[in-house]
Length: 186
Image 1 (cartoon, helix red, strand yellow):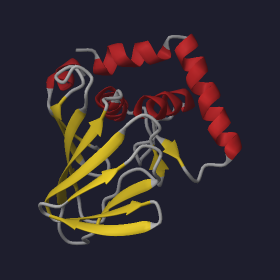
Image 2 (spheres, rainbow, N blue to C red):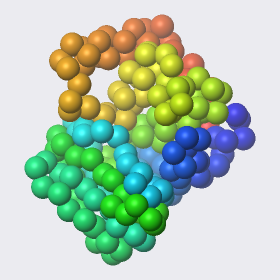
Image 3 (cartoon, helix red, strand yellow):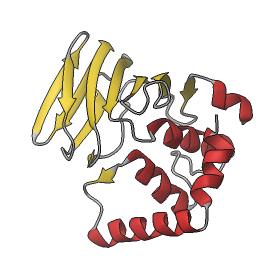
């Protein structure tokens, strides 16, 4: 797995989604992270979620991206941008069933996104996820979501509390640092 850390691009083993890290938190002194994503036809990101600590700006390069922001849905085409402010519910989906969509996301300020994705994709490569790419270990799920500052809207309150507790437990046991060292250490 050590060689994958130096790669700028990674491909999701199950969905074919490709992510390329253009500018890391280290590159920008924590100001932002900048990634390029390629979603296959009908591909989608996380379920409806929000971030408390950073905003995201989407820019489509090729294809059509459906972005649901709050209660509004928009189809972005090449050259179009959309800003998602902090604490705004959103989800993104390839709007085409036939063509991939290529787009960029700038997350401001930076917030461990690259580390979290390297951990997630590393766990997939080590066969430590289910057939959809979700980590088998619930502590890993909680830590990855915390690193991404991703708050899934439709989770029941008790599950949100459980995830928070699992992330705290994982940090206390040093599991977060073990994951970073194994999959995201540069």
